[in-house]
Length: 495
Image (cartoon, rainbow, N blue to C red; front, side, top):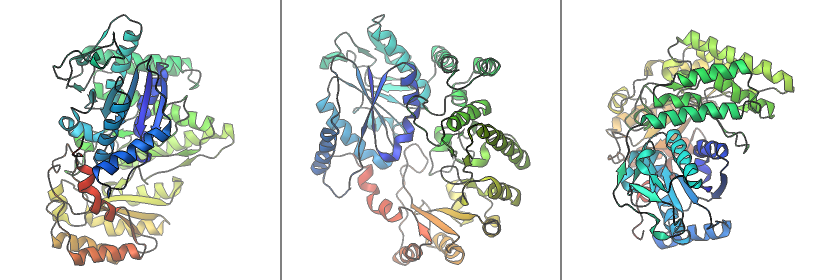
């Protein structure tokens, strides 16, 4: 059995759980690394470009074993990955094709006919179930993969038979299966996986017997599938696949244009502190000193704490990391409050900014604002205290921080007046030390705004945006997003 990851530069981190689980089950991992394509090509040229990339990759597939192609799909790359699976199925018809990712979760019916199985929620439970069951099939203890036994699965089949794995008719049942629930067996499998994982890798991760016992005790107490994330490994340890550490899932804002609050929930879930420290220490032990985090808002970590308490806990974590790093004579660089773990205005008081200025390895401070119009904020479901924005920026600069303000233009319900409020603020505030990252609204599947078109942007406002970019005060892929989004979201006609 082999896991084949189909990826591009922009989504490579999303395969971390898959690589971790493949490692655990001793399944070989191969990577088909492709490059994004110009949207100016027609559908035939587009398919030909992908075909040539696949042929040049010299991907080797052994037809004597089960090959599983995995996709993680964001809406921005919908056209690309649908075209890719179309080509791959022609070259490797006896393989299994599985997809997950934000666009699949948000619009599973769109992908239903192109893939054998979809993962329509958080991927860890789905993948653990899948690999556990495939291991049993490999041992010939059973022949059928029952789709309903896999957490959060969606398929055009109810079961897949592997007696004749190299036959195109290996798919027995045409009865579709949509599993929206976690059966008790799935939760037990995931808990067992986590316990076995930390036992198996205890020496590599430098776990003491007492710490291992504490972790196992916490895992045994899990009674909600959402808490599996808290204890899931932060990155694969055998493939040296280091990347920013995902420490929070869920967001209380639940902005109507963003999938995070609707996919992961409005109640933030934080990575267990012991688990986080284990993997940070492992990085340091392997001379990887750059430590970055993934969170919809850095300040959400250490849940249910006041700002002062959060800061104290962050400082304690940083001091623990620094103390551990002295053993290896390296100085850790911990990045706080910059992409991909921006800060919400709600937490930008002088105390938190002092903390960032003192402890972050980078002076960059990413502030999620999206619009400076309070009325438009209310329309989009975002409730930041805009009144403190001016002061927070000024204080940041005094602390030698470099604020980058995240802005989205073209939001649903956005009027010329809303846009003028934001642009006037940017024109007044931006300079060499205070910049903006400007985006164009993209309708994202699974959000309240998924069916909305971007609001039209007049020529004068567009000129003002371009003027900010020309001065070097505004960055981002605004123009590319504006010109490409329709083509990228379309399903090619010739699939």
